[in-house]
Image (tube, rainbow, N blue to C red):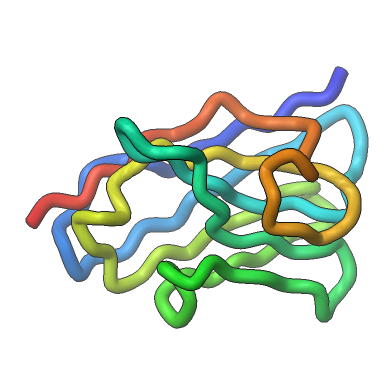
Amino acid sequence: QVQLVESGGGLVQAGGSLRLSCAASGRTFYTMGWFRQAPGKEREFVAAKTWTGGGIEYGDSVKGRFIISRDIIENTVYLQMNSLKPEDTAVYYCAAGGTLVRLLTGYVYWGQGTQVTVSS
């Protein structure tokens, strides 16, 4: 069974920081990453990283503020979110797949999501 379980979401003030975690089980993945979806909006690419070093992508809206990392031994991906803005408010989903891409259709396994709310 493949399972992705997110944790770490919550309520933070604008300018604050939060770290999300996603623990995978059942198999390993070449690419793991994060998407987010705000009410009334489409799911948006946030960040992704390959299991080896070097392969990393960020969405334009979070570049310079968010940092993605992976612990291969623990099969876990993290998203360190800094300088948070109210527009970062969304449900954040962990995703896993093959090649490193920004399209949500490139990821076949998804977590249930964790809510991040940034107050002004």
